[in-house]
Length: 273
Length: 273
DNA sequence: GTCTTTGCACCTAGGTGTTAACCT
DNA sequence: AGGTTAACACCTAGGTGCAAAGAC
Image (cartoon, rainbow over all chains, first blue to last red; front, side):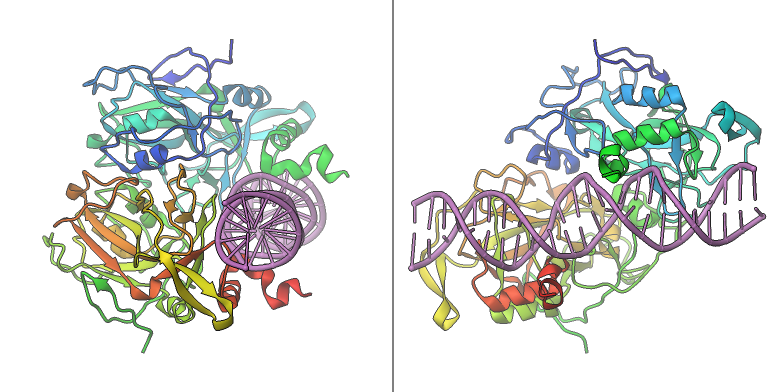
């Protein structure tokens, strides 16, 4: 049995994790931009995938399974976290994410598989990051533990990361793993690059939003995600993290170096030669 | 007076070339994905731009000039080639473009500024590349000239490159320089990466298409661009090129090395040290 | 002979944690 | 003392023309 991820807020689920990958092909390319995508005249190439920064991941034809033709409800929508095992390893230690003035990617990145969409309906997929509590934290080295250090700093301008493949059809979203690897975190409250602004030394929870097109009139990178019938929100407990400007727990550092391809230079086999 | 480019097929124009550039900001980002873009709550950063591979170029607020609110006709649309001076230098020698099995970018890349769109109308912008004549060519070294070597090879599967920012509003298109630098040329007739398939040693002409959303039902990367009221097509004589698998004219090689940043290693100051 | 392919060194562009300096 | 910043070496990822080998 493969690792399993439990998803909270609007849905609970239990299903096997699937890893597939394709190089960008015509169907993929076109599906991004079309409402009348036929998906007929091209083949799909599948290969194995890791949990690093692969951008385009495709589940192959029929991955979304058979779906009733005219279903337009949001009830059936499910979102499944990919790389849940990796997230869990970080979570067991206490995930830390670096934030910088220029913006820093998350590692691991949020990657999800979505099912239960109406194939012919248009959706935005978006991500935001909300505080877990109203506290500020500090890391106590001698006990290797995070301790409450006071109340949270004053709230920060809300930011939403709209997935760059938006707007796209349910069919398109369900055929690929939706990856948020380009999203960046910053501690610069005056950021004008569209990065998500967070306070350092605070605990946060990423959330994924599925937004029906007809419900997106208030959707903006600088406004809170609208709530209502046309929006469904998902979050995963194992993706909670603490923001830092430099890693506190050395086990986190080690795991990041070990798993993030861009940190390969710091692996034992690399720098120590 | 700045260099001027003449555009054929559906429109003639004479206007100064303008070079501006912005780093990707919130307004830019959001404009790609929204039909209800407000463009209100963000600033636009402008800086100078070159003719190389800069991806995001913005003309700044009001660049498109005042436009009547409800104009939806295609009559007023104009497309202006950027880097026309560079194109002209290549054209005077005889532009060559390398094609490879894996796909090769064009240099220079097609970059255009579009005006006269309805700001609130949605458009696709697309590019295709059509044969200039029905001939096959060969390069004669001792005369440094291209000579007809017979009739053209049999036609190749038609491919259209839909600009990745599609679908977007007229407002969005007009606020930026639309760059086709990610487009790739291939000689692989079985290509499944969506690259444009061409025959080597043939003469071609790139074309830019502006396609109103309501006219895009037949738009596909593997079908010819539809013709009719909702589509307007532009081409620029100085962008004609001959396809090669290795450069024939050494003056072309020199100019490519001199201007393409990715070929810097072959500049005199580079490799000869 | 002529054209095409492949592996390569050399770039651009940008994502890592480290380290030392800096701030409060 | 604790938190932040900026320069840096070291990576990934991928766009260049070159030169030798291959194809026809």
